[in-house]
Amino acid sequence: MPMSRTGVVYHEDYLKHETGEHPERKERLIATMELLKETGALTKLTCIAPKKATPEQIEYVHDASYVEEVRMRCQSGRGMLDSDTILSQDSYEVALLASGGVIGAVDAVMNDLKSVFALIRPPGHHAEASQGMGFCIFNNVAIAARHAQKQHKLKRILIVDWDVHHGNGTQHIFYDDASVLYFSIHQSPLYPGTGKTDEIGTGDGKGFTVNVPLPGGIGDAGYTYVFNEILIPIALEFHPELILISAGQDAHFADPIGGMNVTAKGFGHLASIVKSIANSTCEGRIVAALEGGYDLTALPYSVLSILNSFGDLGMDIKEPMTAPPALKDEVSSQVREKVKEVKEAQKECWGVL
Ligand SMILES: [Zn+2]
Image (tube, rainbow, N blue to C red; front, side, top):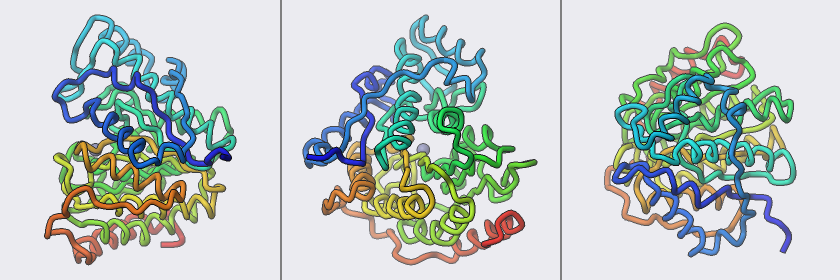
């Protein structure tokens, strides 16, 4: 069988970041890998073994003193980076392997693969330059973007963050930087509280941060509307050479933390929209990196659905549980209003709006 041009990054060492009963726990990856095996999807994908990022690579976006602090604290046993971010003895090494996994995924799509889903943990998009937070230690996607610029000389990278939370860390790292376009769709109000429509970047980076904060419960229809109205036109005008996705599936209707009512099938649809942008701008190059997603059934099905779209696996994706009656097929007026507000905030930066 010829090598599949869609791949996954995975390593058993990702389970060594021990968090106990915490929502961000190793069972998330165990259940996801089990479903990929059970359904036969894994045999249709190219498996990529990650290597640890070097501290120098982590320092593309993080302060050296913070990287050293994480290393020292893990060496001394268990600890907390903030009130909800646990460090276990192996967490530093696992966090290096998580960032290294996304770096390896970037290398793979710059060589012979088209799309890769890095099934990693801990997640990264809340991690700030000098402070981990919100279950995140190192900002995997931001590090991988810098790697793509340094190693592969890319000039324009698009980050699509569909995690239900705003990626404050990623936004801040690239806030004055026109070479990385950061697009986030997230629930608001919700942790961490950043990501308002008027946060659009600063200096050269003005317009290269695009935030779409939305009220809870808007479902697949609302997400699709936002992608069509905001993401597609801006992304086509920006014309990225690589697309990274901060792929948190905590917007699923069954998620215990988020409340956006997206379905597993819906995530597959979002993936196909991003794929069509990638096909028309950057030869299809997409790297998705796992962020949130805390329901142990919804997350695996959502990941399967995304990979099904990336790789044209031809699988019939079923919802693993019954969707709530509140799930909307229509685009609410609140979503339309918010889209108008985003266009107003961004229109001087993007001719297409
Ligand atoms: Zn999240």
